[in-house]
Image (spheres, rainbow, N blue to C red):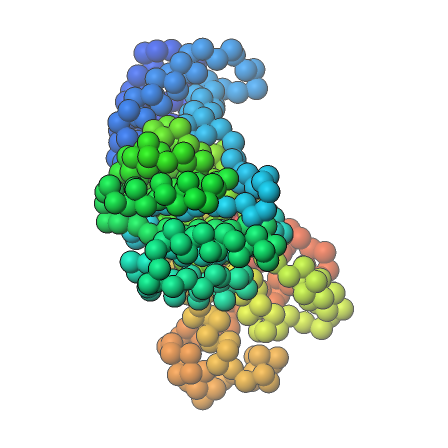
Length: 458
């Protein structure tokens, strides 16, 4: 996410780091580079002009902060304006309403409305603890109705049984009445989309809005459409009283134009951002955290939240106690670690939240990726329980059998066993309280996988 913008901005901002003071002359070239970076990221032109003008005003108008160099002052000005452009602060869902609080999702076909409906229902169920009902009124695509029912089953949320032969407004009216009778706190309505904005679609969604009186009307848009996302959002905002935006497929958007354009053009906050295909991959949109990612400062707060949400703390404690008693670290423990990383959104999701990852670029991503971690898990799963407990017995014929079972080459089994051996030694040091040694051991283990080893092994 934002990879190309991050790398371009970092190169640009380094140019001003050695300046003794900030003047209109010595930031002229830097502002020009920032303008080009944003345009290449497909940020809307009016937003680019406003952004650079505000950065210039902030940088030249700042009082001297004795704790910062002039270069740091300028970076701070860019950061502050990124946060301001994206909305300033997280805009939470407003569900303060007589139950059921209705959330209406609108947007073009293919933007990810149905998937977002499921992700949002899971977020509300798990984080906000509200009893939630889903309903699809997309009678033009029976597959959309089936998809929502499948998602609802997966996340254990109820879904009202839609009938594609009925009118969308009749389905919405029935679902609303059902939600009232059964005591649901939230009703999420997934509406139909079109390939482009047209009068029929707008008329239908306006009718549904008037009928359901939603507390939240969220526009769902594909981040990879860049500034077109902001222009489409503006068209919907003119037809509907939108309360916010869900930006989908942001994990596949290396530019970031939509995230930086939507709020400025529509005046509506981005409330959630979709960061992958998994049903859990929906994050509340925090402008300050996204700005930190763009400037390669990391997003440690989101990383901590991921760990708290996804890591099985009790299991981790049990393993730590077992290792501290000298009972050893097994391949099954190693597999659990890999599964934990997968549950947290994968290694790429974790890496992009660490400060300084942008400088390693695509090389690191090629060497440390979720596909390789999946191969490692498959190799361990191909072993017998005895082999997982005692990897010393894994030799020639066993290695060939394991490789065949996992669908990999024998050398990949050898690499896994070497990495496990390093991690096992690291865990022994950890059990004895040797944290610095543990970090160096981890650095050595990851050294063969790219620049992350250097970072951890410092």
